[in-house]
Amino acid sequence: MTDEIISPSLAGFLIRVGLTASARERVIAIDRALAAELEDDELDAEGCAELVLEAADLIANAGPLGFDWSAWDEEEEIDHV
Image 1 (cartoon, one colour):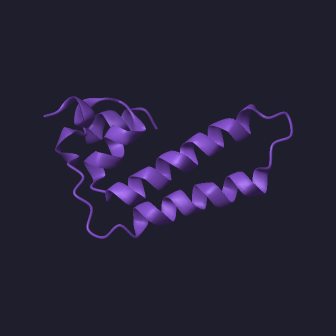
Image 2 (cartoon, helix red, strand yellow):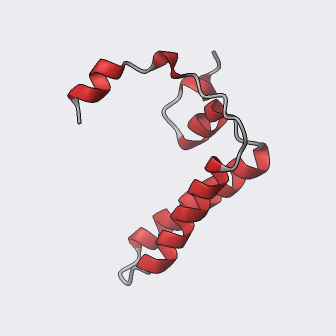
Image 3 (cartoon, helix red, strand yellow):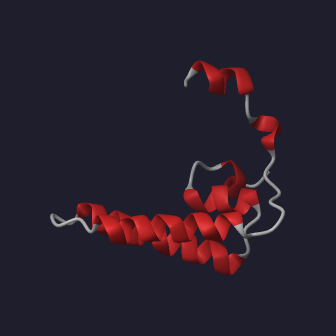
């Protein structure tokens, strides 16, 4: 495994799920825009929601994703819900 795949970063996650480079770049740009918006005193909730939906759409429409679920512990996930 590479450091990108095991790092707890957005880029590492997007690589792991198999997004194309252009989709990864757009989702990362959306993440940065959301972070900047959340620091603003006058939050644009509708604008943030649109960005979140755009990012979700990019991930959902990426085609068959190659996420490796084997590292996830289902029992642990249930315990934290």
